[in-house]
Image (cartoon, rainbow, N blue to C red; front, top):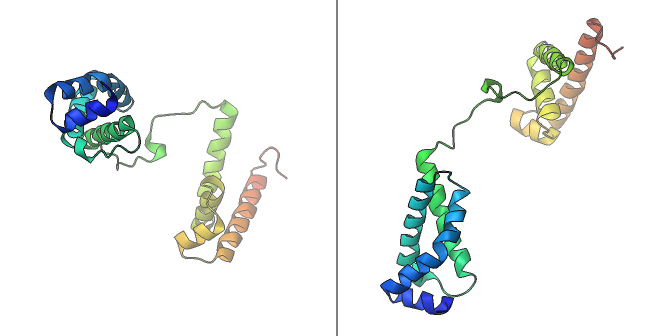
Length: 178
């Protein structure tokens, strides 16, 4: 039976054709699900739900494009709905509150601590612009919009922050400065 014949039989609600469709495509769709959920049982549940929707809505497939691609979209949407029900994707965790540490040399760790300590000594405006520009990679236009300041103010705050950091580094006789 060709794919087109199988689809037409499923549109007529032929139970044998529906089983054949499931048998033919469920292993492929199971592979799709396993990329989203790790539990085999959860993946099986998603595939069953997805095939229920596929068979219920098969009349919406117009025969243009890939039938497998059409089914895949339904399976992926089912997997995402499953994940949204089980996980809070809107949860924000500040990076400093995680226990994940990048491997660092002692020198690099000390340098990072020094920099953080020096940044803490900068006035709020300097520190904010410096962080946004140097660390986060924002452009001066974006910083200006986010902080409600002019682009020139953003640029001058960055220049002054760099000057102040250099002065602080010279003050503590940091190696390589001065």
